[in-house]
Length: 224
Image (cartoon, rainbow, N blue to C red; front, side):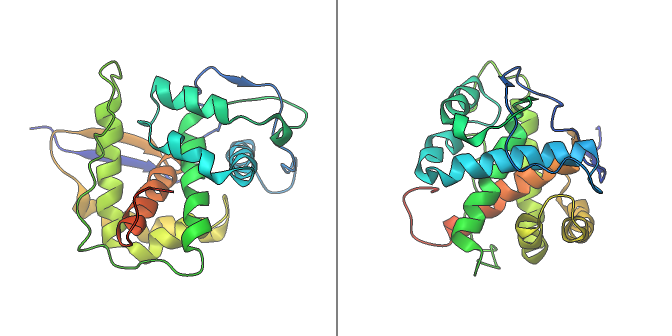
């Protein structure tokens, strides 16, 4: 039986990797062009700033988006409809759906739980991460498995997950939160699955899981 292997890279991944092919002809405004940030972190921050602007112009409009299966054709279609030219300035970048989705969940969590958020998810009913799984997505099982690992990790370390989601990209607070969470991941592995993912991807799914678990602790009929 093949063991479950998790490879977590603590060096950030480029925001241009694994793009959907949708080219955003202009880059989000107010993205730092120098300083200590390397190109990969600037890319992550660019996608976050873009999501921040889109979210700020109508947070209710993201409900249809987060209800799509990650990385699906439907998800990309809905994300494209959320695009707002007023959130763009000069330059160009490629749209990265996993980074955009993670940024949206970060923003949803901050909007609702920044001042005070649930810190115990032991009694929360398991979330079904297979909902909406498209038959044509060959990578769907990996996306589901990754969210299950993140779910287990968040349940074991809620404070670190909260610190991660509330931290800004490429800061010491982000790195510290990752370092706190990594040890808890060892107890969340299962057999017969191999996963490889970057820090930025794992931050995204932690944000999703933390938000959904937090919402599950309060009466609501919607994730937004």
